[in-house]
Amino acid sequence: MSSTQTFTDDVFISYRHLDNELLDEQGKGWIDNFHERFESVLGEALGYEPLIWRDPRLPGNAYFADVLEERIKNTAVLISILSPGYVQSDWCMGELREFCRLAEKKGGLSVGDRLRVMKVVKTHIDRAQHPPEFQKQLGYEFYEIDKMTQRPVAFGQELGRHRDQRYWSKLDDLAWDVKQVLSVINPRAHIPAAGSVFSRVQGTVYLAQTTRDLSTERDQIKRELQNRGYDILPADELPLISPNYEEAVRDCVSRAKLSVHLIGGSYGIVPEGAGSRSIVRLQNEIAAERNRDQAFSRLLWMPVGLTPHEEVQAQFIEHLRTDPATQQGAELLQTTLEELKNVIQLRLSSNGDNRKEEQSGETPAKIYLIFDRRDLDGVVPLNDYLSVDKRYQVLLPLIEDEGADDSQAFEIHKDNLAQCDAVLIYYGNANQVWFEYKRRDLKKLVGLDRKSLLAAEAVYVASPKTPHKQLFNSPDTLVIKNFQDFSPAVLDSFVARVQTAAKGANDARN
Image 1 (cartoon, one colour):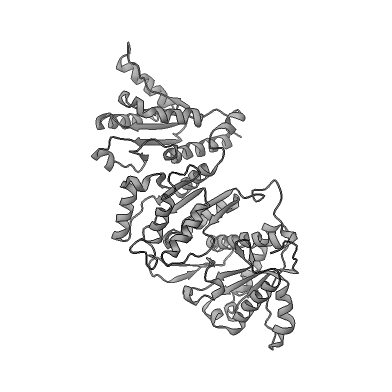
Image 2 (image 1 turned 135 degrees about the vertical axis):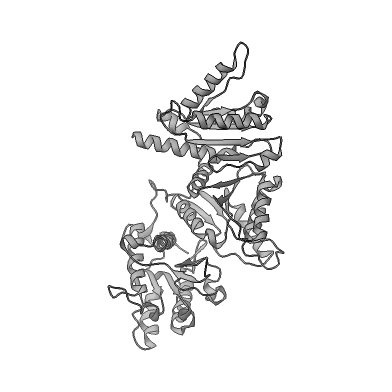
C-alpha cells in the first residue's frame, strides 16, 4: 500500500447490535464501553484523537449503497466484534466483505505483513465458524476459558478498584496493532523518527505458541517486547496441518534472533499429521535446528511449582530436563515470570555487559565464586566471563594453601561472604560432603556482618554427572545444571538477578 493514500476516518467498528443490548449502571452496552475506552487508549498511543465510527443502524438497504459504502471506502481500519450472532448476521458479514472489497480497490487490504481488518472476539466461537477473512488471524479474545469448568468467561468492563486488567491489556494490544497500521497509511499517525522506542525495529523474537494455561504470561511478554520495539512472530495463526505447520514455524524462526518457549502443565494441540508431537514440542525442535547459529539463542521456561496435567506432558518435561541434545544451545529456566523477562532482555540487549554502569561511575557488583581446588580448570571460563566480559568483581576462595591453615581459609571465606553481592557455588569434581558444607556455611554466615541481602544465590552443577547432582534441586536457590562445555548463556538467569538487584539499589540511591 502506498503511504500517500489518505483516509477520512481511522477506524470503523462493525458489530451486531444485539451484542450491545446488555446495559450497565450508566445505561451503556458492551459495544458502547468498548468504543469509548478503545478510542481513549488508541488516542493516547497515537498522540491525537482518532476518528472512530460505527454503523448507527439506519433503516433500509439504501444505507449500504449511498452512505455506508462511501464512508467505508474512506476508512483505514475495520474492527469486527465477533460473536455467534455476528457470524450469522447477513448485515454484519456484508459490512466486513464490503470493507475488504473496497480496500482492495483503494491501496490494498494488506499493510506489510498486517491486515487492515482485525477481529475482536467478544464471545467464544469455534475457529471453523470465524469468517474466512479472519481464519489466519490470531485476534484479540476478551474472555478466558475457565480451567475448572472449561467454559468461556468474559473479561469485566468495570472501572475503579474492580477493574479487570485482562480487559485493558487486550485493549492495549489492539491499540498497538492499529497504531502500526495507521503509521503506514495515515500521515497523522507516523511513528516518531527519533527519541522513541518505536522509532526503529530492535529485532525479531519468535515467541512460541503455548497452551492456554500460559496464554496470559505469553501476552505479557509479547506486550512488553512490542513496547520496546521488537517484532513478534508468529504474527498470524499457523496452519495446524503437518508439514505446513513445521514449514511456517521454520520460516518464522529463521527471521528471529531469539526464540522463547513457555512450557505449561498441558501437552498442547497436536497438528494433523504430526504424529504425537504437540505444537509446543514441534516449535522447540525446530528452533533447536539453529543451535549452532551464534546469532540466535533459545530460552525454555517453566513456572515455579509446575505440575503436569497429563502423563505425556510429564514425560516431555523430563525429556527437556535430561536430554543433552534438547538442551544444546538453549537455557531451561524454572523461575518467576519477572525473572524470565529479565533474561529475555539480557539476551536481546546489545550491551549485555556492565559498560554503562562503568561509564556512570557505579561500582560493579561483587560475585563470590566458591569452588574446590579440584575444579580450578572448570571455573576458569566462568571466572573469565564474569570478570572480563561482564566486568563484575569476582571474589575467590583461598586457592594456594602454602603456609595457610584452615582457620585462615575460613576467615577469607567469611569475609568474602560478608562483602559480596551474589554467590555462585561451582559443584564439579568436589564430593557431596564438600558441597553440603559450603551450602551450610552459606546459610550460617550470610547474615553476619552484612548490610543487605544477597542479590542472587546460585549453584552451578557441572560434570561429572552423579546421582546426587541429577536429583539435586532447591526451592530457594537458583540451580544451573550444565554437564556440557561452558556456554555464557547458561548464566543468563543468574546475571539477570544480579543486574535487577543492582538496578534496584541504584534507583534507591538516586
